[in-house]
Length: 374
Image (cartoon, rainbow, N blue to C red; front, side):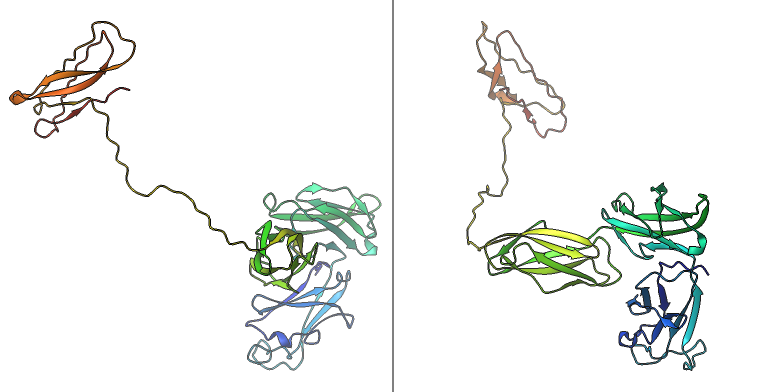
């Protein structure tokens, strides 16, 4: 069926299975009766088993997968056949591998951005392949010769290319294409720390947050090392569980000083600077004005009263000669009923002014406000 040699085998079940019943004997992958080495991992809430070969599968070979009744569900019920009957013999599936294929990266493998990866393709000797040209997202790389056709490639950033399509084209001595394979891999942000500088109290503990931009399908072990192991204490092991984006790592302060902590994983490497110092109690006062409401009065030169809908004219006396600056001037305004109001003005010599108020919304005589110039 031309199954890619760089792939994996995945078996799905109708319900979660007991992980303790999964082994190389209860799920066996073989070629010509010889068991193939590989890793068995559980996926999708223990509903799937994935077999990842330790080496690419052989070219043009018949691969046999056998599943026995030793695998049970969480309640201990053994596997049954399609009719619900107990298995009398292992369930057996076979397929044939292709004669050419991409062996690195593996199918289903995520690529960490900005890291160099090896692109590799292999083929059956019967094809007579002399060169292989890799293309990444349509861009060809220089051709490479065999028999191990490989080259290095730097993964683009996840923001610019969330996925890459890799094509390998094999050509014979006459530069004729004789084989082709293709795979698509997701580009993911590697392991990152949420802090670049971590303050750690002497004799105390600070929490370092470590995470991924997208959850991993399997548990991600993380190894921690310190440039100066006498300054900080690190946990013996840290694992970011499958399906989670972040894990908290406790960092202890052993001695005053600074050191770099390196976190390594299959999803890349991250670093953080830890600074250990003793705690110092200190009171910090921050002066602040009292909360409240500030009412500012509008500068006035006086008040003019007028009947609703009426009109009043205000006449101010002017200086007889020019003056050097501005001065206040008092003017008299006769009001209804014989009352007089004095209003202050700020004017220059040679000027006259009058004020008209035609607002109908004033109650009684109304108030007209004339701003004072400054």
